[in-house]
Length: 253
Image (tube, rainbow, N blue to C red; front, side, top):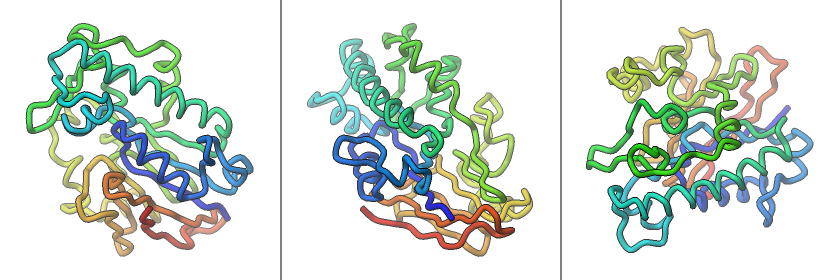
């Protein structure tokens, strides 16, 4: 039996991430893995999208600016520098317990590695702080190598953790992915996808939810892009069982 702590999309909200991991007894006061994590009794899963704050307000908070301007190279420098600093800290955390800290590749992480796509928000904010051609900085090579190693899914028996959904097409962030509305709607329109994929349970992010963790036990999945709501998902899994999930709950912190 292992306890899995699954945390939704980070989007550079590092304070919330570390608060969640401390609340779950997965990080100590120095932001190092606790003994249960080091022993593998607790497994940490970050569902992806480490980078790119979600709003100009979040960028301003990250950089310490009163107002963030995505067209100002100095502002982009500050945004990139702060994210690099925190990525270094997370990389060190994972390196201490690589068998127990799993970080999945989200589409925003992929966009930092593959500069073919400029991601943004419906309000016109664009995420270009790691795009040198648009005034941003180059992601340091060692962080690029680290992020390129992020898996697109984690399987524990018949339980899947993935950034978007159980569909294989949703693990590749290409033109078809960005043209398709289903990555944001599948869990409402086709909740049966999890069972059709032969899974007993799935944990996914990508779509921000304002009401907290969406736990659909009948269809066998949880949507957890709710770090801004200060919640994470806790699962007890027994990978030796046909139905590995022994318990699942949303945990506020």
